[in-house]
Length: 410
Image 1: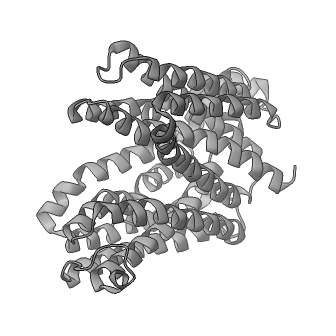
Image 2: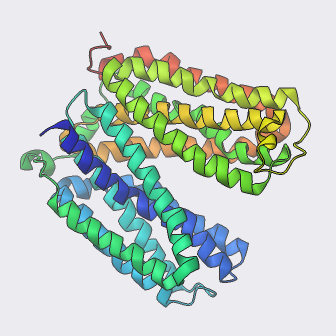
């Protein structure tokens, strides 16, 4: 199958993967807030994200039973039904049935993630992982914009029920598309045995380094991520600027970085891309550290005027944001290509879910302590620290060389 056709299907599937994530994390907080739900209850809804972390527990079922396209289609139909049902409950008083519907959304979404990741690993050939992951990140980001922003705008025009029904219709169309995707055959004998291959994979020489690498490669990004927007506010920038520059223009920069990172990964090979793009990803954190060290006066002009763009603190923070978003896309494309590369096609559902869980552990742990560390150290020293957090992973690269089979690994 031509690479372009593969990339088209990857774009469709990862748009489907990003859509429910945006609904749960971007739309639902707005939906419940405008219905008068307390911040405490909205905060508890973060527990709905647990299925995305725990999906490794039922990933063997996806490897063992059924076609991966069928799993995706069924999950999308469940998402359609549950999304259409959600606005039928009283949102001002979230009850157990409503919580159950929302939990069903995240379980179905996590399950389709397992199937989509496994299907994609089976679809692409060695050397194509870079381009595949550039398109993958782009499609998922577009889905986040479409769901997180598009549905909220739609709700402001036509009401929340219409917005949820529109999302449900999207899911039905995507389910039909998933069933039309080209078949990726997995030998039945291999599907019936997953435990022994998983054990062999876990105890393969260098496995400890692979898991340590997955745990640490995005550590610097995760550590700085939660502190960027508080830093903006403390430097006198407005909430509106955060929305426009960081959350909108920043997404475009991330997409551009992911597409370029995917192309470079395919051209250079995964090993070289992990080193070069990982270093670029780390260096961008020093941009914020520089702004914090300069301790410039807060902006005096209102955001939106042309003259405001040339105020030192504003222009430097904008430049740091664009650089950080762009290099994050570069590093993400190489990193996801590596995750895909080291999984066996026949057992990709279990193996990729396991690696994703390891990555989520470091991301959540780094984010959890970032506020405390910034309070103790201050912004500038903490941002410098996040730069150095990238180097343990880069130091592990020689130990994972045996797991990478491309032209740059020799």
